[in-house]
Image (cartoon, rainbow, N blue to C red; front, top):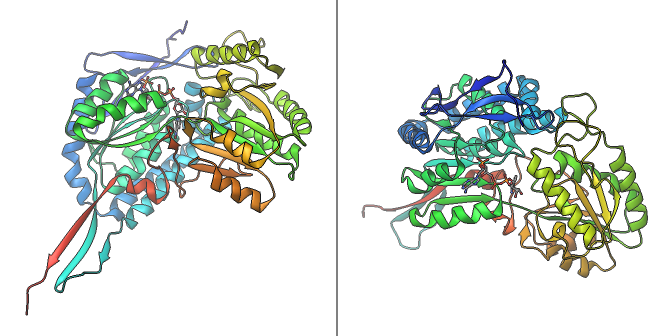
Length: 487
Ligand code: NAP
């Protein structure tokens, strides 16, 4: 049971240039998953608050879209600078509300600052085209136009990264936005809003609301003012939004679940591969949409890879992310830890062997600490192979033929990321061509970077964030045809 302390602070929503409490005064306690204590209370609004925020965003839109991309870019760039200045403080809040180690939290803030800076520049490149005419006396051009007011919904695993990928391109494109973070992790985003405000954000251009997710989403879907919804989260909620968006024909960007294969070929050093695999798998406790979650290792190197993996996994330092040297924090909530236990017990019942981990850590009296887990003797019907695990569990399988491993990698409804470990260029290209995933890391466990497109195929989503594509997602193309006067 979470407990509030006498020093519990209260954070507010940001609507129309003002920090506000919920209309009915409701708050929600944000829990530190390492201590199970309440870090702070956050205003927990309603559909009415969302409606006000959308109205404010609509009011701000004409002025914001008239500003030049250079002027909008200055505010985004200044936001990036302030985020960097305050990275330590924001990272601390992020660790306390989400659980990830401080070093990972700080990396998230710096990566997000880079995203703000990159879109500050990319907004200047929202080019149209001049298209050659087929009839005499005509001129054809396209120009770019902001989509309109955006509703942005994000999950708890990367509270700042994922909102930055929406706020920065939307504002760069001339859109205004209403942001709804996950209920468990709003606090670090409050600090990013403080940076935006100090950077010169005009009232109404970006708003922050909290409240019951379904109510906020219904307002985004049903209010004609909201022209686009950008959602990051589960495939199930993404599909629900897609159904709901049909009536108002809202633009949609969907960044959804994944189940990434990590494939190790025999030409490369299996111990180096194991190190990269462990790093990619246990980052943020495996609670990462692009986390590798099925490890296919060539049978010639499987033994060495597995032994090294177990050694690396056992050596990881588990604890409160605020403490020095911690490499893995708690899982973000009790339910996530219980789901992980469920996945492990299902795998065990179906014949898996646990090589290390497999249980809640008994070194802590409080907090949702789960031991990094490695399993073998895996079969396809185990839940951790069919469902997105989002957990610190690492199932190792073997393979012998390239075509077979491509088929196994693609045998999923997801298509977000995939990882290949090889030094053979031909193998690398065959894998890049054959695998159905939006992001492919060849010997690279952390491929995301602001200038490159990020997103999934199949049921992993629609559209791309980051890169030039990430700006296009907030722009409409207007075609203008001009018939010149004769003579
Ligand atoms: P989730 O349940 O879909 O929640 C994500 C966000 O949607 C939260 O803000 C949540 O609000 C809100 N939400 C919940 N129910 C909703 C509804 N009916 N209508 C509209 N919004 C609703 O996802 P999760 O399980 O917390 O997050 C993990 C998932 O996100 C995983 O599947 C992961 O792969 C995916 N993800 C994808 C990417 C990517 O870029 N592709 C990145 C990160 C995570 P509340 O917090 O208030 O419930």
